[in-house]
Each structure stands twice: as C-alpha cells, then as structure tokens.
Length: 197
Figure 1 (cartoon, one colour):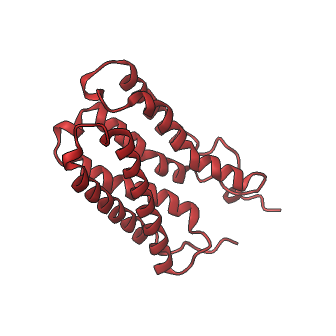
Figure 2: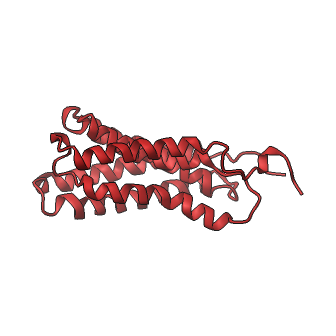
C-alpha cells in the first residue's frame, strides 16, 4: 500500500484555495443580491446567489463521487481553477467593470475559459498521452461550455432585456473568445506529465 504524500487524500491539504474562491464569490453575490447598488440592477444577482455556488460545486462533487474510497490526491488546484471564473465575473460586477471598461466582457470570456478549461483539463486528461488529442478534447469541451453559457445568458438576460439588437454579435464573439480560451488551455496542457508509478 502506497504511503507517500503523492497519494494523500486528507481533505485539509490545499483545501483553502477553492474555499477562499467560494467564500469571496458568495460574499460578493450576497452584496449584489441585497445591497441595492446600481451596478447590480437587472443582473439577476438573487438567482446567481443560488446558481453560482451550485455550478462551482458541480465539478468537485462529481470528482468526489467518482473517486470516493480511492487513495488519490485531491486536486484542490484544479477545483480552484474551475471556480475562479465565477469569482472574476462577480468581482467585475462589484467593481462595475462591465459598464466602465469597454473590453472587460471580452477579456472575461477569454481568460475565464482559459482558467475553467485548464482546471477541467487537469482533471480529465490523465489517461490521454497524445498531444493533439489533449488539445482537441479541451478545446471541444470549452466550445460546448461556451455555447451552453451563452444559451443561459440568452434565457436569463437577453430574451426579455434591452440588449436584443446587439445580442447576436455579442453571443458569437463570446463563443469565439471562450473557444479560443479553451484552445489556449489545451495548448498549455498538451504535454502529459510523468506517468504515475
């Protein structure tokens, strides 16, 4: 039976990174939902207060279900990467960057997909050794998630909102930037690490 630290399942090692991301996100969501500040108006922060924590916990929850009872290292860093885009999005709203910085939304779609897909790639690519397959898997997953996110934005904000005139161009741009971010994450993760003993 392996006893070295690489096979450590103790939950206290590294847990603070995703816990801090979660706490900062939920704290800002609470402010957005209840403070009545102008930058949060019409941005569904009451719904986000429920939806974001749930979405942030989907990947760690699925990982725990799959690895329950196994002697493997908990990938806290990957969990934090998957959760970080939610914190960045909420912080952008808290600081009113979406309305005051013209490129903020575009930068978010690119950078957040780099982080999200890097985290997912760290969790999913262990058995894949071929570089092009790793890039393709991460990019494809990111593209699907970008489409899903835009469908959610349309349903939540756009279909009855004031942005219908520019929604098509914005949606295509956001999907392209998300897919490009996923491609960058795939390139970063294209080389597999050393084979585990």
